[in-house]
Length: 350
Image (cartoon, rainbow, N blue to C red):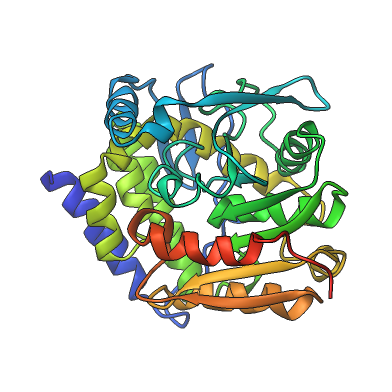
């Protein structure tokens, strides 16, 4: 680890120790990100200049080469694409056989990166669809990364299967999955892994989150996109998860998506409609919902899980033993069993 990254992470750790009495809360809706990537090569986050340079895809290819050697279920991959209402193609690989499950990944990675460790434990029982957010993986690039569009992407992909399906969303990907669950007639159940419900974040957590994003931006300004993801992951991940992700090459592979993520943050700030933590959105969900959180996760995600369960009439919470935020990376077998139990047979309304 370089001295600069250590210093940046130390600054982030200091920000976590600031109490609400000593600092104003920092929210993603108050970070002031300018969306001018590709025009001037830089953005502004608060007072930070954030340059986002195009990374090499070699690390991403190394990740895919490594995972494809891991088992036959990956070498036999298929693909499936759905077209959104604004003409964008959302694509993902398809693995396994059985009832369909669509997996919506988290903020840092794509459909392949976030779910590869989980696949060997599910492909014998389910057909697993791994689409990526627009601008990532097999999905088309598009400047519109607004929250409403990202919800539409989930709906379009799920509807393109033309049969009832289950939906799994992790962390930042759980938010559009929640909104889709409130609107779709194609879903028979939704599993949310550590959903991010911003309204339950306390002031100290807002400061810590703002520090992580600022650190990510500072490193991106230097073209160090893998380090930028490492810095940002310090907010949700615990030490074990950081180590596992590092060993798997996750940060190197996900660095290419830092510009996309900064634009997602920017456009989320500008969005004025209801989002996933709105009680009205949660209250509109009638299908069964399983909310999963790690036993060793941080308090914010436990509160987020309870917020969902408190407002969805047909929801239950389940704890993943010994896991933190990234159970799909660190505890895939235990997570897979929880998902298989929920989706086999397809959940029924109660």
